[in-house]
Image (cartoon, rainbow, N blue to C red; front, side):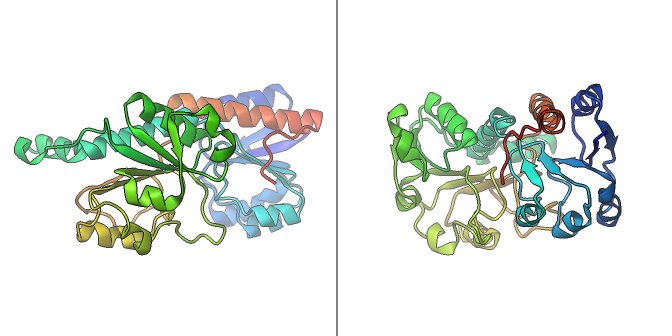
Length: 312
């Protein structure tokens, strides 16, 4: 009988599906890195979300591991190269949290535009700061969307419905742009120069370096809003800090960070900076979907020798 470890909190439908298909399951979400290194040898499969770091050391200790599953899209917390060297399959669940992430991106945009966070805090404090809380409407503004995968596509659809002009920068968009006549395909430089709002929905550079740093920020409008719900460090946090302090951009909203969990960050406490703790995909609906998806993919793998949504 195959044995699977679920090492991050997720909907219990994953455990139920595996057990109903005679796959042994342990749900242990409080392993320290050392404990994971010590115990991973006992498992044929590992299911994670974003908290567990599947390092090279973990993989080297995984004597029986055949498959790693990410209940979500991003696999930044898994050492893909180390897994590939040991012929371990890595699979994810693309599309499972698309709508949740797109909705969170929209929520950040609206909150940043209308100063919702500050309005909430000052009202709770009894300040009634009405005169200092004039916001901006997003209708008619130009938004640059960097990346056009599942989330970028869904977010663009929402923005289009709300009356924004949409610029898309994506290596894959030109192949399908005829399907989206309302969107404009362009290069990164045009987005940097023309966009009132820039939202990131792309993968990081291969070397982990930021896509946008001080040089790119200098090209942007001085009231631009920057939103990132994709991957940490797509925009240099140091350069964002400088831009906010120098009033050379209008605001920043981040759900992802260069170092997570973000217990200490250069952007903490700054005006016009809205931060959330990597929760874009954390809706009840999305978590059920991705847990169900990854469990069924594991069933197909162990019972039918079928691989779905492999990233390597």
